[in-house]
Length: 477
Image (tube, rainbow, N blue to C red; front, side):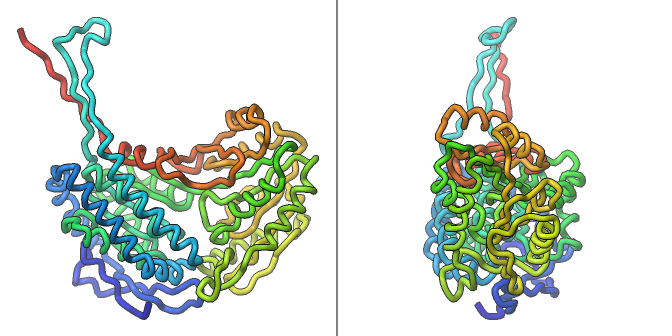
């Protein structure tokens, strides 16, 4: 990509003199730099979004939708360039990068389609006791204003778009703060929306150091809604600071794969390994622990070992791989500390346990106990603990002891058992006979407990970032 300065023409002032270098997790090479905005520059961006909102909210829905359709087409036209940027900036393998871009284009199109089907309603007064037909309400949806969209590093195009597209189609303007690693992708995404015809000031990208502008923009008085994906730690801090501002948050997870004695173990093993180690486990919905009934644990592990041995490890620029270097040294150190803690406390290493720089090899532990950190903490890396249980009740209770509640999987051939477990699990989504994952994107996606606030999914996101308005008509005679 070269050492280029990516400047966001939508909101970044020419006065910005400071830049942050962006390095690749694959080889630590500098691949670009982004402006480190000041608080005054953030003020200007927010003010621009606030002023532009008064115009954008009145743009007809079909015109807003047409811009989104064009953005989806342009995104696909830049598939090769964006794929290479994703690989260099966040370490994606080529297949995953391609998938992220094509999925994002589909998301944008479906967002435009869905908005056209969200209609208002009228309510007659005589449907409630004591009132008559002379009173009725016209119920419409209106945009909430300026949306602050904060995206993480791991899906810098898709998870940014999952906030931006529903906000825009709803008539809102957006302040978009990408993760620092991922900012180059975020700026390219902004250019695509601009090329699609999005007016100046509707989408405003701010880049910079969290210590300088992070807390500042979260508490800005002209932000009307915050849509955040990231760690629970940061999400809690935002919720504490953002007084009376609506929140939509996707936070951490400790997704469990519960394997019952009648499960198809070959099928379960394939799904679990794919769900745990894709993109080195750097996904909120990655399978992060296995809770397996003792009767079938040994046989499941034999299948898991077979599947994990098939994973390709290395640099995605050199070959198609499953396990890539983690995003930075801090992340690799954290995962390695979890591995060392499990070893020290007696977990049985089944596979892996090897590290080369920030490249941590896929690691599988058996006989993990509840006093080990890896049993509870989210690794965001390629380490998978197996906790053996005596029965389904013990599995459910152990799953529910987590502070997180994003997703869980249950593998069983008995549909009644599947529903029994699903009804008791304290999570936003239960996957029956499948790995934990996000999507399809029009399904509801949410977390409970410390895994999130509110519900995402295309229709749900549009509704979250618009508000109901009732106009009550009183007829005179």
